[in-house]
Length: 463
Picture 1 (cartoon, rainbow, N blue to C red):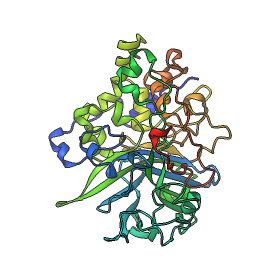
Picture 2 (cartoon, rainbow, N blue to C red):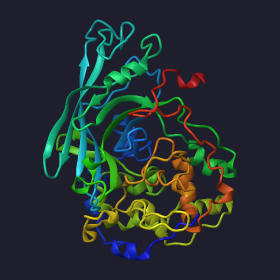
Picture 3 (tube, helix red, strand yellow):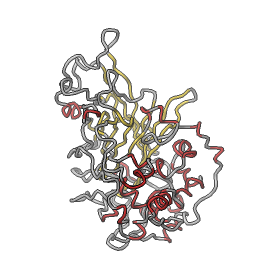
Picture 4 (cartoon, rainbow, N blue to C red):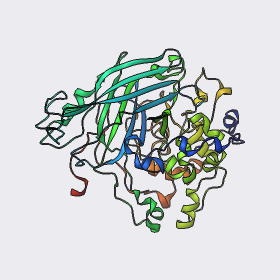
């Protein structure tokens, strides 16, 4: 497969010269936090606000809608009671959508949470009997949520006032039919959408021994799904495509950029303490000294930080691979990675016959307002794949990552191939074709919203 870079489109987006300067002294790390799987210093001690993954895809069973999912709290050990996992009641959890390419949110969905704790001084238990429904009196602790929506035209509106969070799965004796509890927690939205908040299986699959000198220095440390058996806390929303499209018209303007944030209350007000769009960017692209800064800002500011942009145009990982495995690093600067991470793929050739996910393709967008920015871009016009390929676009499956992200996309192997130049050469790097040898989650996605697998209840160390 060949995937060529459209230089004219990049020039139109103002990327070729790679951006203006901005003082890092104005973006001190203490102004915010960090996100993803414990990859940034400040968030490592605050897991309830640690945003781990974002997914965005055309709903496979309802292709007139789009589904957006964001996860928090990495490495939830299912047996970690008696005080099980909860959303932070002093934080605001957001999924944000940019539909005109300027790096600012045009639509925001925001969840806030409150506790209902009936345990008092009488018991330590999470539940004192089998929980057979979401409103069961045996469930002694639950959370409720308010879901608000923001648009520039309408401001803030309340979409759900008293939603119920699906509880932590405490085990088969306590919750004999957890699927029923999840189904009862779903809320129908005006206009035909749905929302969800609650515990779920950790759908991100990876062998994290990559941090031991790239799988042990000899590819011997692969094949073990490090996140298997762990849970996360998810928020998800499914809405008609027009609801998030520029000018409410997904046919003319099918491309959106998606990211999520957590805003935590502090004495000075709410501050952004996590941010996540594309997977693995903060882990393996942004250097340690900039991780907290990167997560404290909005995407429209990304292009103003030359040190961050340089990590995209001159990435570190290929040099490490060359040093350890003697696989030559592609030449820099890397315009292909600029498209993947900062602009969206502007033009594809060879077997790929359609533009994918550059917001410049939205007919009603103003090219002069476009800002290179890190977010997960999705072209909603690409229909669900009949036979999804875990390697997504690199394998010719146009609905897969980096055109959005599905639960089954192998983002580790895709990203490794991408940084090693697969999008430049049109073919996979044979020496790394097996990737981390973790090719799928241990639990399949569900056929209907919210799609993410049900949370497990077995202790991780029992397997």
